Amino acid sequence: MSSICILTDNSAQFPRPSFPGMEIINVIDLGISVYGELNNNGNSIKTTALPATANETLKPHLLPPTVQDFHNSYVNLSKNYNEILGVFLSSSINDCFRNAKTAADALRNSVNIQLIDSQTTSVGLGILVQSIAEAIHNGANSGEVDRMARNLVKHTYTVLSVPGLSYLESNGFVDFTQSTITEMLELFPLFSLEDGVLTPLEKVKSHRQSALYFQEFIEEFIELQHIALVQSSPPNQAEARMLREFVQEVYPHTPFTEHAINLPLATLLGPNSMGLIVIESEH
Image (cartoon, rainbow, N blue to C red; front, top):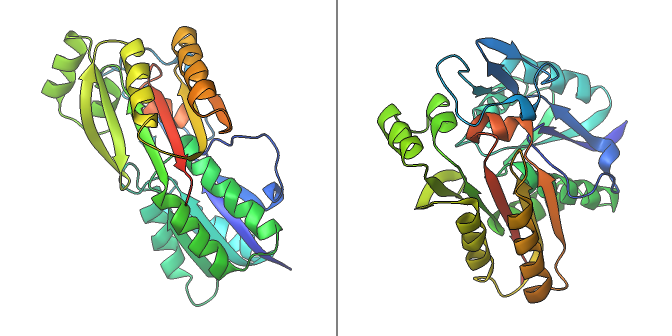
């Protein structure tokens, strides 16, 4: 029986398609509800099919796996692993972590389960999971992995540009009036995930202004371990090129990756949203 495995959710996006330790990563799916129908595996709808604005007919919702889903995953994984490390998207934006903990508490006497709230999602979550997998691959024990992961969480920063608020309103984060006014004025609210909580920063009027804000945000750091851009659907090529060239000039030795927005994040924020994730170097 192997020692440790990782369970994460499918909002995670990895900087590289393959890496040491990826074989111990297992993924549980978030539920995607649109048009009143639940798409558990996300195969029946694509990100490109989501309209720019959500309405009462679309009714997009990002749903957590159920407690029973987690129970089943834990039991199955415990047949092959001594320890299960669950690493999930921010508990403040989805009940995935809460349901994972409820299921873990019920199995505390029979299965060794440790949980980490990533306080982020998308590439931020992917980098965290990848770093943990590589550490385990290199022989780190569960205590070392836990300390490393929680330290990395503290150095991960996420900024989101959300054109309109109709998707966030459908998911219960803003009220109808706030969403309607923002959509009418064609504003692009900017949010951070401050300690995992979706926190408003300011409002801009275009994707270009969002990209300029991303640049200013990056400049606040002296040394970065990784910079990632989550592109909207359809992508904003000019803004991505502007940000890429900026990073190459200011942080020439820092990896910069670009990722298409995935279905879970698009269901939560809207397909036209963009995200910036930066990992600060520890020293």
